[in-house]
Amino acid sequence: MNRLYHVPLSPFCRKVRLVLAEKKIEVELVDEKYWEPSADFLRRNPAGKVPVLKMGGTHLTESHAIVEYLEELHPTPALLPGTPQDRFEARRLVMWFDDKFHNEVTKNLLYERVNKKIMGQGYPESRAIKTGAQKIKYHIDYMGWLLEQRRWLAGDAMTIADFTAAAHFSCLDYIRDIDWNRNAAVKDWYAKIKSRPAFRSILADQIPGFIQPPHYADLDF
Image (cartoon, rainbow, N blue to C red; front, side):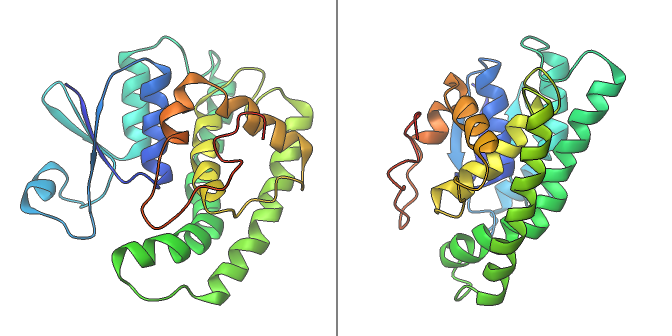
């Protein structure tokens, strides 16, 4: 059995979960407190980070590398476009969300509100939350601009860029940090992607101490 060591409310873990589910690869989910690393976990990944995917006797690390590996091993359904230019655009947006969006928004909202509490690292920093709440507006507007020209974020087909963005958005949606009224195109995009069967386990997540908002698992918002 494949096994994914993960944290339920981690966008990087959720990205891998979505890709596994989309490609219909069965996996056992194992919650991992990476901030309290055991010797066994450090043997699986000396970097002490999640996700870690055990597959075929090998431990795979780093979400982007895992996704690329899965795409090569299981090319259908394809999550990277066929042309070099289109693959570049999908990968560019993956890095946009895993780097720029993560540093400007996810860290300032999710990590302050949730991770600090779970890890026992004190209280949220109001300045960071204010920064994240301001920065996310810019990102939603940028996504809306992309979606005015395309069916999906990177083009006319769904790609790993959409799953990467949706992984971050689903975490923030769980803690009520997205204004879905800001951009109708972004709201429609998210409704479309969270209706996919691959999203079912994500929408079923229950995080102790944090209650889902009523719309979280509602496919019609």
